[in-house]
Length: 100
Image (cartoon, rainbow, N blue to C red):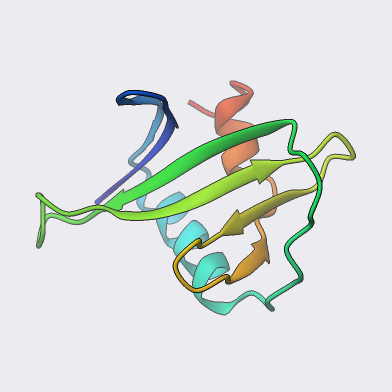
């Protein structure tokens, strides 16, 4: 299992690869079980694509947005169904180099 945090332009560029199983499980748990919140209609400070892959389906990624705002709030958001949850700090810690 792996989670890639990417910037998407003409192609997706992975900035972070999360392979720690506890961290992967924590991110999936946040996505599946956190209470849904209203998507903030503000311009984000940073926006990334979170791509989750599994060895069961190595050719297919599950994609959601990871969005950070200047007030420090971070969200996971699905454009498919509009689900939005507080992302916590784990992905931010990877992106900021606090976890490698």
